[in-house]
Image (cartoon, rainbow, N blue to C red):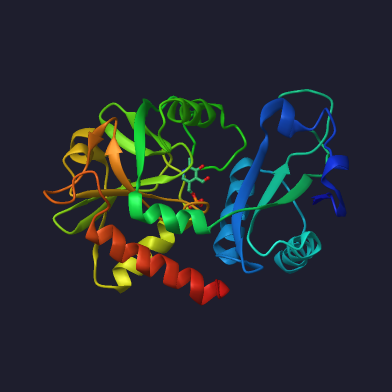
Length: 287
Ligand code: PLP
């Protein structure tokens, strides 16, 4: 197991950040998680665009250009030798004596890890689907920025784990925003519905990809808020993320989702979307 720390590749066990890194003291850091399949990074371009946007939103200055950075990431993946893995990238505002205001001249800290991941499990889960619970969304007001300040997400995911569910859908009043680490979707009368981007959800790369694939396949996508009542009454539901490109949601808070014949089971629209999603994965990575 190897990791990348500020330009060096070294054993994971020896890889560390300074105790005064602003990432640890303030969660003053952004991150990305990329799927690597068959040794190739899925959607690398969109991940880089989002990373740069997040850095710009926070005013974190990082001078490395896309080309050299891509080479560093690929070098780490190759050095680890895993064909199927998750690439984690974290960039903080750097190391400085603790003070809320930005330091004058601290270079950004960049760390990357690569951990093996079983994407085959996600294909197998298409058959059964997964359950979600719901929790109030008590995160800060700019969750569109992918920062490491994830305590609200962590507590929601742990609640899901303890309830025997895969994910927690986060509610603002009656509105379903997204999951703790996934975007949330419902299907009603053939229409595919997901919360619009803005400041109250993370604009998922898998979300964006699914919208493009569905639209190209002449399916109707509506980016609009939907309520918990709509989700319970939906024909189908599913979630998307880098680590779960698409998974059918068959129950919300113990309420089984679906039309007659499909209640509590994955539905046909989700199955069609899963075909499109995994065909795109194969096109990009040969997986
Ligand atoms: N929403 C939240 C809160 C997330 O943390 C994530 C990913 O970690 C997603 C959605 C899905 O985003 P992506 O498709 O880019 O993995």
